[in-house]
Length: 247
Length: 219
Ligand SMILES: Nc1ncnc2c1ncn2[C@@H]1O[C@H](COP(=O)(O)OP(=O)(O)OP(=O)(O)O)[C@@H](O)[C@H]1O
Ligand SMILES: [Mg+2]
Image 1 (tube, rainbow over the protein chains, first blue to last red):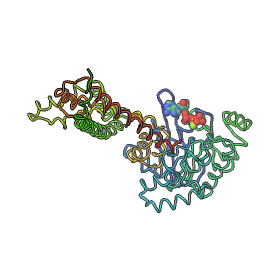
Image 2 (image 1 turned 90 degrees about the vertical axis):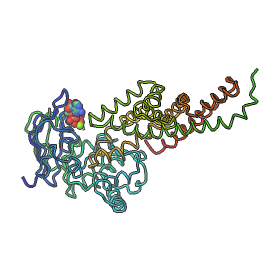
Image 3 (image 1 turned 90 degrees about the horizontal axis):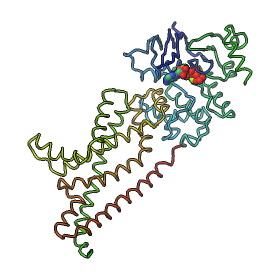
Image 4 (image 1 turned 45 degrees about the horizontal axis):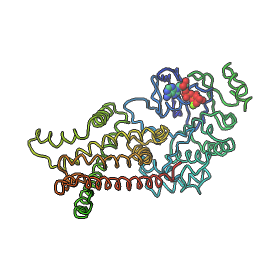
């Protein structure tokens, strides 16, 4: 399919003892926001991390823009330039300032000049609402601010896809909203996003498609309205009844 | 009877020896840091072969006496190549190679202490291993190992006295020479002890200061 930016085919990932993925198929369309939900240990993170090859699949294909990327002949770094990732634990670089966190990869990987990168970086900081923090160190920021910087850092590489692994799970409740708002803004600008989250409100409002994972497989996939109001699979129903009632 | 009145006469020579001890130590730890950085990066890298090479180096050097290493270089290598090795060169080589192994182990530990998430964040931005090491991992590891590098400097300063046996005229050797001239071993070795103590104490103060300075902006 031409309009698929990522295609995952028959993906297996086996760790020493556990089989985290047992044959996953999923397509991500250009401009789509795909939300992954599912119980703990169902393989959501593993699937996401296989997409940018932070984990190497044991079997199956990850196809990015029509090219199989889990292949020895492919330069992983070339692929990763085009796929940003936002982590649950932010993973900002603590030894350099906020602005340097943002401009480092554009300069070293994309070869941008410092002026050009800084200008673009400041624009991104404005977009995520904290231009005044440019010269602070990450430790001086709140969790919500750090995660917004992490999003700006990923955007600075001008990626074609952004992967989010539970971006709000490590945050105090009062900071979740500010991060979701930034993600929403990024989505509305047309960014292709794959989002693992427990924020069902976000999934419903921003998601174009929701996939429910359980025990290493995608069990059900539907548009959010459909999946949340009329799930078909018994395990989906059980999961949704738990999370929707507890939140 | 104890007699320290002659000490001022030999002090210039002892101070010169202390100077040699200091630069010898600085050279050994400096070169050792370069060797150790490569060894530490190799030991914590992805290449199996380089990992084995660095672990072999680190374990062989740390598992054998420095004095034996000095003898091997000063007496052993000339027998092999048929030309003598100047004692200064032999001393620097032996001490650097030795220090490189200890610092390699320190660097390896420092790199391993950096959170895996830091590698992953850098990789996810398209940075390769080299860029990631250089800009992300090594600077963070370096801050954490400063106290241990300071300790290594102090240890090396003391261990450098071993090269007195190959006639390298550092502090201890200067003392030995003074003893043969004055026949006052107790007084001279007391003074030398104090001189080592002053040097190691000053360095430990400097290490504490730099630790505080480097610790400011992180977490
Ligand atoms: N590096 C690893 N080594 C060994 N096992 C792993 C590793 N990473 C994940 N697993 C295992 O793989 C399975 C899937 O893990 P994964 O992290 O993908 O789940 P998840 O859906 O993201 O869960 P959570 O909601 O808790 O983040 C789990 O059983 C987990 O223990
Ligand atoms: Mg997870």
